[in-house]
Length: 271
Image (cartoon, rainbow, N blue to C red; front, side, top):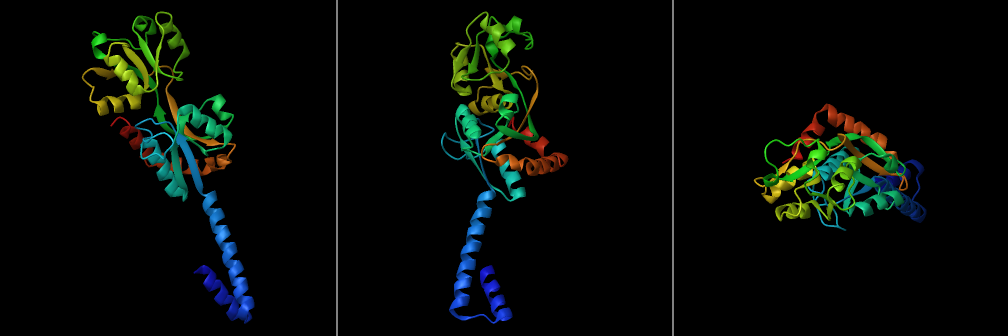
């Protein structure tokens, strides 16, 4: 439609017509089409995340079907007029893809010096911390979750590849080898069978899974953080050039925080 109007204006101003005008209009159409595609590609971001409800929901190798962090990205994308997508990938593969520029970044995660080498981070968007998931029948009375020495006789489970607190892990390993599992649901099954007494887990994930699996009567979630309380932020791949979006994301994040929208998002994670 815009090309038609431009061509008509040229005819009126310059009196140009015939085949020459038609040829120029065709060229103009092609140039505008290419420019449109280029603009669309420059306004598209593909991020990745592990299959980790309630943050990201979906199957490995496919697009995320939902999740708290996925929804946050979509909300920001709408405000910035960006087409966004999230791929569900195993965690190590997701990190590697961001490092190599195969994706534009990762949904909110912890910022570390190692990750800063290949990603630029937005402002913090969500408070996260690890805590203990525990079998209620294995613990009697009040438990001091910060006294790892008092807990070390219990068998601890952790996800494969996770590093929560090296000092805490060393204390438990001095008494028993730490049991490793592929995911949090498997850890819960190990707890139910009596193989482990407690496990490390993201607090929001723990609350979500206990409710989803209907095991609140037998499995509890500690409210005490293991290690330091941390805040997650969007990570943008330097290799893909997506780090250029940090400033624009930060403007929207500041706007959402002032409106109280990020606090509401955090409140939804335990539901």
